[in-house]
Length: 262
Ligand code: F6R
Image 1 (cartoon, rainbow, N blue to C red):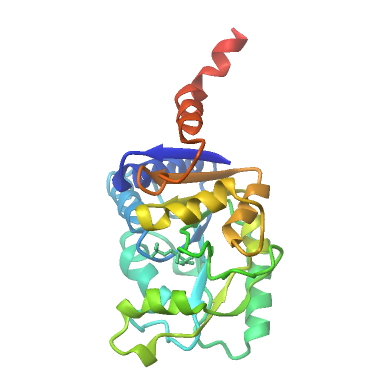
Image 2 (tube, protein in one colour):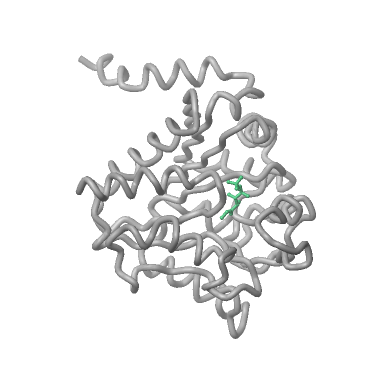
């Protein structure tokens, strides 16, 4: 795991957007896995800005959404499809046929999830998966207890997640209780994973994710087994990490490895 600590939220978003742009330069038909929530908004803002300056182009980029609430139409203002369109996709030149997402109202849940997995495979897999992290350590909507090898499927949201989400809905009874989400096994197949966390309320989950034991009880800890994960955190979100100074040291020195071969 590469832990990158920056002083504030804007800096972690700038760093994440920069990584995505660098990878796009190497592979123009980049396959991106996209998360919703408050945390990735700054990355989308940065990428839109890069696109406006002609520094990234989406003609061949393909995107897959990480999750979706069950029961919401794609035009529902709280659906993840709506979020993705309004906060990102409508501002870049992505082709409609290159946007893949989980349906809120699929005709058959199992078939839909299976087909989603197959679609990801048919595009050569996800190159970069963007993730946020829940206070309980969930990634996607893989709540604590989710199998670390789970695939795309329906999940019951944890009570704390329902409570966290309630602020986005007018009435408490409208808050969805179920969702479709890529599984942890699905996420783990992405070639690179970028997890972002900001703020003190994420510090315990970040600590458990990076320095705790690998356990289904803290789904993000499964990422320790992935070969290319970047954990981008601001000072507050990194405040419980015990090896904070080491991570900073590694980051400062990372360009010096080649110098040692001269
Ligand atoms: C969103 C998602 C969730 C969020 C997590 C953090 O697609 O899958 O795992 O990333 O709940 O949400 P925020 O960023 O709103 O704190």
